[in-house]
Length: 478
Image 1: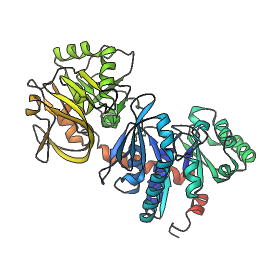
Image 2: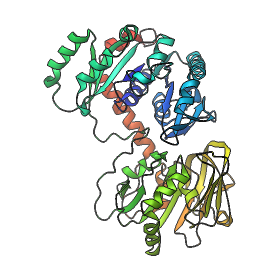
Image 3: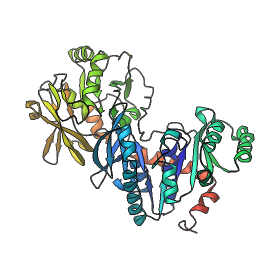
Image 4: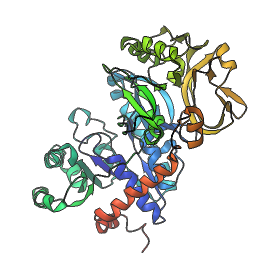
C-alpha cells in the first residue's frame, strides 16, 4: 500500500507508476483505493462510479475501471456534507458526523471489494487517502492504516520534497503512528526532487539512521506531466497571441474538470482558468464546466459578476458551451424539489437556452460513443448526472448518442451544451467543435499513455527494485 505524509504528496502517481511498471513485465496487477474524497470521477464498465485517479491507475494496468477498485467515494457538496458512493452506486448524502457513524458499515464494503478484486488479480497496489497521521480520523479508519492493518499489507510512505520540510513530514508522520503501524512501514519514497541527488544524501543518511527504515528512492520532478487530477485544477500553459482564447470559471464545486485537460495541451488554444475575485479576459469561447452543486455554483457565478460578462461576450459574437452542470445553468430554471444536491428549491438559470432541468434521484452513469452534430465527428465520453432536462431547445441537439439525441444548440449557434463529459478527448471532435485556427489538437489518449510510461521509466531508474521485488517475488518473472 502507498500512503502519503500529506494530500497531494504523489500517492496517485506512484501507484500509477508501479502499476505500469508491473504491467509491462506481464504481471496481472490492479489498483485499489479503499476510500477517496474527490469531485472528479469516472464511470466504470460495470455501471459504477470511482475516483478519477483510480481509473487512470486501471489504465496503467491495461484494465477497464471497475467499481471494486474504489469501493467508497465521497463527493463533497458543502463544507460539511458529501454524497456517499459505495461500490459504484449512490448511497445518499451524509454530513461528517453521520458518515463517521457509518464507517463500520463502509469497512465491510471495502473489505468485500478487496476480497473480490484479490480473487481476480494476484497483485494489488493500494493507495491511501490524505495522511495516516490525521489523529481526528483514526477511529474506524478505512482509508489508510486501518485498512492496511485489516488486510495485513506492507506500506510505503511517500513525501513531497517540492513542498519543503520533507524530513519533518516523514519523521513526524511516523511519530504519530502506533507501534504496529510504524512496523508496517517498509520504507520511504521522496517525490518531486529537483537538482543533484548528491546534495540530498546526508539528509537521507540521517533519515535512515533516525528511523531505522530505508529510503527506497528519490523520484525526480517530471516536467510537463499531465495526468488526471483528483481535485486540484492544473495551471494552463503559455500560448502566443494568435491562439484561441478559452475562458473557464472555476466553480467552488467544479467537478470532472479533467474535461479541460486536452485544451491545456492544445497548441492552438490559450486556456484561462478564472477563480474567485479574478477578472475574466475577452474570450472566443467560454466553457461552463461540471458542478457537484449546480444551483450553488450558479449563485456563485452571479455573485462574481459573470452574468453581465457572458451577455457582453455573446453580444460581441463569442461562443458559450456548458458541460453537464454548466449545461443545466444555461436553461431557464433548475429545480431540486427533493434536495438531491442541497436545500430543496428552484433557481433561475441564465436563460440562454429554452429548457428547464429537474434534479431527480437515480444518477445516470454510462460510457457512450456519440457523434457531434452537425458534421458527424465521433466523440467518446461518459455521462454522470442526476438532472432531467426538457424544453424546446433540445429540438436542436448537440450530440447523437447511438440514436438518442442529447444537448442543445441555440438558433444562432452561439450557445450550446450537453451532458457528455470527455468531449475534447478525441482530437478530431475537439477541433471540429472549437475550430481553433492554428495547429491541430494533441492526441490526448496517447499523451496519457506516454506519461504513464514516463512514470514507469522513473520507477525503474530511481527506486530500489531489489526491495520492491522482495515484496512481490512470488509474482514477478524470474
